[in-house]
Image 1 (cartoon, rainbow, N blue to C red):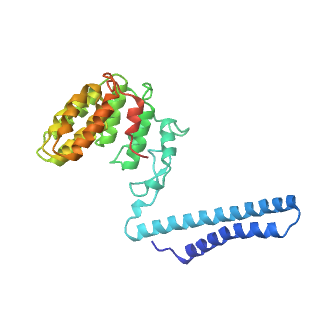
Image 2: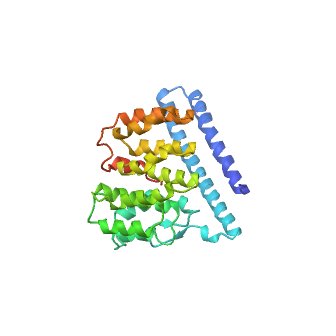
Image 3: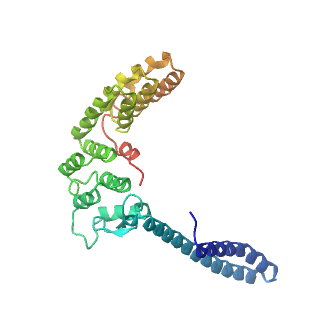
Length: 303
């Protein structure tokens, strides 16, 4: 991207100030005989130069952002310039510019009701998820759901189930199912497995792989039975994905299925089977029979 002369001048200023930090230090040391005075002068000079550098850097950052916004508007994308919206209580926008928003602050406003927002936690999350939200908002809402997993008062089971059925994003649906399972209700988790099994029967290898990738994120033994038949899939890539999915969902009871692949025609499958068998042997027969917070957190989409 090309910036105007003002931006170039700021780059020069920033580089100059940075160089002056080194120059000023050597000058002050060489020009003073009193060690205490040299140190005091040096510290004062460095603090002033660092403040100037920070100011120049901030001005440069703002100039770049302004240039981006101008280019968006010039290309007919004025809607991508940040705007104030009511559903989050902070500045945010669509999928292109929402990256400029502090996601942590949005998350905080979801979990701790702002003074000027009387909506419940569920209402605020639903506001974030309204109107086909971008991935960034999905990630924030998903993290909020995870953080409220043990708070049934602010996030009741029926609200979780409603979000699950009203939303289409696979990450959000999975985390809602996992949180409900952590509370002792496996209904949504079983629905996740059942829907994946439909794709596992597809005649297209890519569909079967996609389903295995989603099952790998569940991290619960309930997915293991759906994965095991795919260990013998005619497609090598599907067998590899089945091994990876079973490693994330299985336990010691599944080792025998994996060891059968140690004689697989594919060297890649044989090698991975050895690794997965070793990993599963380290788990007890009761591992992954309940949903842990660490397993849910491991699959949260990045904010």
